[in-house]
Image (cartoon, rainbow, N blue to C red; front, top):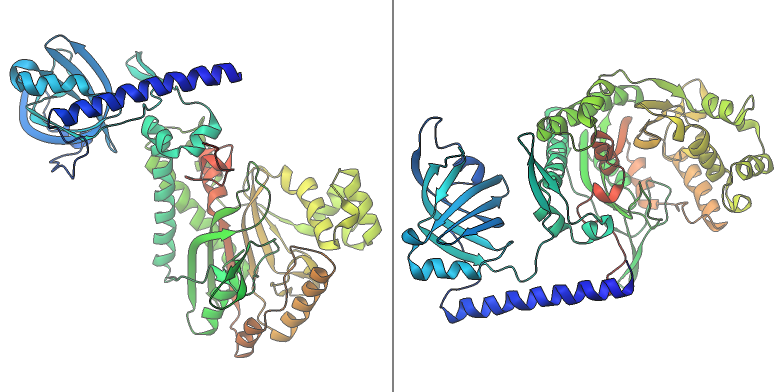
Length: 515
């Protein structure tokens, strides 16, 4: 769109908004409050349309409230549609019923206004259940027009042609996106049902939901660059957490055998199709379990989450065939492949772990990894894995037995101390879950923290330091346990075939607008 077109668009909007403010002034002049304190509803729209049995022409009186989404005037009568969070219902305004004064106020109403009405239900000649309005109240005058699109009936189905298709604007103005797109409301309602199902699943297995600090004096539990802030009263730096792990495991030391947390983590990283700096994580830990047992738990949990999303969407596909497609995919058991053989095959060598640092740099440069010669050995291995293995995994698959140097918090694999008892679940080329047989040896843990601190001192911004308090907790005796982390944004993207993470988050991180 050219600057001239943008200017014309702004002029048009300013004209419409001025007209709406003029109507606001006219309402006030007539003694009509434009912004109400409340409205006593008797029913929501979806409930009201069920109250008139088939074959009955007249019904009980209802009080409904919501937003005007359609308006058709015919002289002394007006038909409109009112929408709330459950659906929509038709309204019928007649001058003979409302009287001259109240009917005259309707000329000051616009699409998008929030109103409340009361009156009996009846069935029109076309069979649509409608409220014959006897009283009407303005609840909130919309001073800015919502981008409603054109609607038409095609083969008996309502088809909406969106007037709000710019993805960036929809993410910025999620409130407007939700107001004009019922399918987007349905999508995010399904996300809420997914989270509730996960809670129900874990609660049913005697996990205790807890809350741990978001502001931490030392970040840890993952390899990521943190956000840094400053606490004025304590005069100290603090970090937004990059993971919940170390505090949850402290609780297991304290005697809570099964704990979980669903909360936001923060990583100071780039923004792309699958990354947002603020994201929702589920982490849960089970004492006396190992990674093999946690794989079974993850399979069952994901099936429960997929079922909840499918049920919430009610058979209405948000994307082509998404719920039905994933029903079969989440039947389990998921395939399992080993990390080292999988990457070795991808790189084309007998054992990728036998390559020295220089050989890993060359392998990374061959796949165009930026600044490969500046990366640490663990980071190079991770980049190679992402390219050769992770990106090629389609259906949910467990990748198991990671190298020790990539897993500073996992226990060594029984029978092969160069590997760890760790798995990650991948689908559609992206990580969906990460889990360990958790390390509970404080001496071993200190050695791994020291190795991370060395990498950090060498310039690796994603490496962590030594967490002395966590080591002290371990020294009190940490039981063996299995731990799992699942990114709920990516899980939901997968379950609904959502292409971009910003469409799975209500308010994604974006550059501020210039007003």
